[in-house]
Length: 275
Length: 252
Image 1: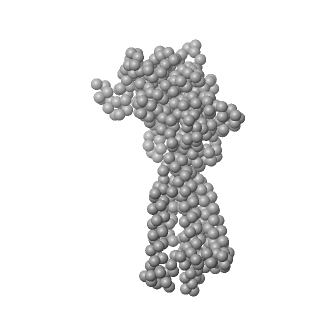
Image 2 (image 1 turned 30 degrees about the horizontal axis):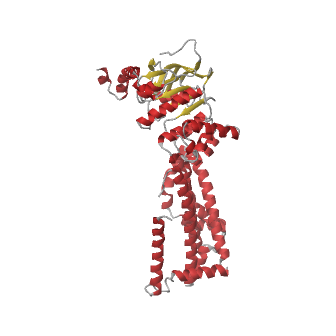
Image 3 (image 1 turned 180 degrees about the vertical axis):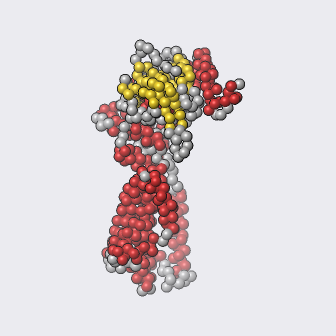
């Protein structure tokens, strides 16, 4: 299903993309994704939901340039991505990717130092990012001294200081409790509004997708394809209070209608799903 | 100092006091074991006289050299072997059984090749220690989270930058364990080799003192070895603890 938005500024796109993992040691190849078409508008918040193993992370990694598509074209700002992460893309992973041997401040400064940015500029940007993420008081702490949510904020800060124009979030709150997830969602919305970046969020949680996104792509069981793109119609100024909006339930209900059968399929219950 | 630390010191103090009392009361034959206070007294006199200081320095110099070669060489070999999965697969059984073979049986071969010099001793120290470092490096690199490789790609880091800036610090706790083992094994390898066959060194001097029934000298040098090995290990342990606590690993 193509998600083209004619006349709008397309920031990143996947055209007819498939990803097949070759078989290893006699095992058959795995067709993980596609064919998939997706056009992300500049500055939009797009979420991808789907059953486990449907290729959501594969989609993100192909778009990031962490994996190469088996077929199809991937572009970012009009230029093709070919197996290398282009400048301007930031990725936050589900796993804790903070560096335990560095302080929070040094974690955030890592990418800027790598890029040889002027120290005064590094100090300014890192201090700003930590203040924005509420980590100023923990700048000299080590990740082990922080909670899971705070460690994820450290990883977001590390991405944020590089001022990416496209931020890819791979289930970044997957390991957090429900309340922390809601609050982290607010943080991400604040970040999105402030940076003006385009955000692609991969998530299992339908409520999280419905709360945060302008549009939500519901994927089928493997090989993942978009079954429907749901536009939420939320205003840009929004936060977690939106979960009590009447429209919120409608959106999550519609997503679940799409995904229930696919989730059953991925669990091997296709007969039940049909019922 | 923590409560556990005080208990540890008390246990050692009680053990020394019991040994002292047993020797003084004649429960242990003075010709077999001398009291710890006499050991300490003999050690002080030996060090002040400078009689065997050249042998002491020689041995500790060789231990340091063997430990450094083992640590650097073991790390380098570990990195190379980790990057070559088939080589690793073929070497794994060798590593698993390495310490089941008494490495000292090769000492005469080394003497035949290199003569009665310090080289065979250094090689014995390295042979005893290096595999521990290789195994620790492999373990450490195995435990580097996969996500760090992705982070390296996002930061467009090359292989060398990824290895030095991410994988090496991520694997550091395991490497430090390897370093501790390498130092201990280097001590064992060097002293034992000197004891068996070498013409010089602390092991040789202890062996000669034993043959000459010179208990004061023998126990003085044994005490010196125990003190040095313990202090070095305690220092490495303290550094390891500090690094582990900072990372929230909380090693015992």
